[in-house]
Length: 429
Image (tube, rainbow, N blue to C red; front, top):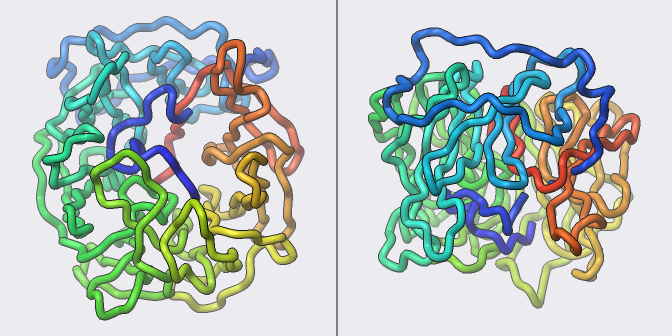
């Protein structure tokens, strides 16, 4: 993965020009989808903590990113920067504080809360007040937090904040990376927003896991990360830190503990061989062998194959057999149900788009996405991915264009032009 945007890696929410997209209004998706929002229990944050009125307007045009009859929650930002929370196909707008823009991060396990970044809406300079906020999904009230990310050019900064994952509807894990690439993991309790130190990890590769920007994946009662507990390991391994026994063990070797993949930041840019782990924590995907040199714009190692294995490294099997590998190390990503793994293969010519390939793990069947579709992330629908149509970018509006792509049927559903930041409930980091 070669990324020029460090904003998502260091805690600052992506700005409209950096990341994140569709115009066709599909009546078949909208029919029968209207599902009302209902208030939830007393675990919700207090709406009095920020005087921001909940708006009820539905965006126009609007293309529902859920199938008919769904009751799943998702959130997204429209082309003018407004945040919407959708249940099924019923959308409500979340009002941001004056001069600010809210960008979704992740829903809590039961979708009672949505964690968001609260950024400057029209930044003309460094945003030194980019902080996490909490949205009550029932009332749409926005509650600020004290957890803030430094500006990208804050040269005096020594700690960089990242979200790891929700532990419950009233708690989550976050990390702070220091200049030596050590990471302190905190447990945050709501609504008081108290922090408790869980552990300090010696060295973590932020730019290596699908669970960026922390580089740490929360799976059940354990944290998984690429890095090392001691430099004597001689590189990065996939580590498992038990939240119960507080022991740190390692499984597969990931390769060099190096740097690369970031631009325009003072934060450490730590990297190793890309990896991912299924939502149930049972299976991992990683490169064999891993990298022996750091990322470079001028000299990449010949790509090595991806493998899938049990989380302890046993039972390893080759992924994407027969696929031309090319140069560089590609990022694997498991679908939420563990049925697919996807990655992008570099064309060898940066002027040409990557080739996105999906493998169905039950039988090894490969599906290549249509040319011009770049991988974004998974949706809550089994076998449906969110993709960027790069053939639509450019003049006259230079807007992003996102589509839903059904792997089995090949069906493509364009979402409204310029929309971005889609996050579904029920999908972990």
